[in-house]
Image (cartoon, rainbow, N blue to C red; front, side, top):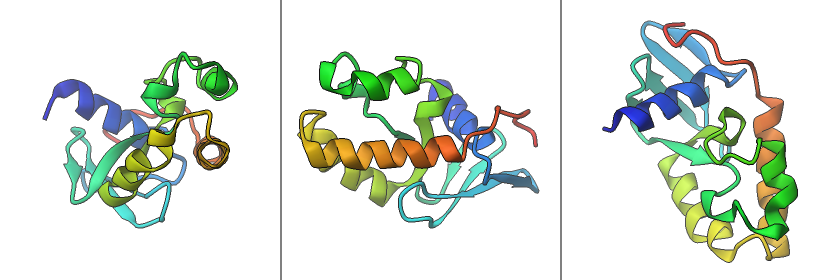
Length: 130
């Protein structure tokens, strides 16, 4: 796995107020379905853990998504926009809401709700070793 992706996964874990580090593993819950997720302290995802860009990367630069993008510093890789999700939920979002784009009212509603949930779980990232 690429070092950059591991770094982002670890950043998502360490900035999640629900995440707990014990025995070399960060444990938290999927942003969508709340299933258990695990990331090793070196950033390696375990099981079905995947990186979620809450505001889809493709939405940045679209006028309809400007307010959402501003909430995460207009940067798709801002830690506030990175979360952990199970692969199933992340894939379903990618083929559903992400694909419909920011012009779709329901897609905007879902992404806004997810961003609110992510920001409610925000904490300043901690040392990755726990």
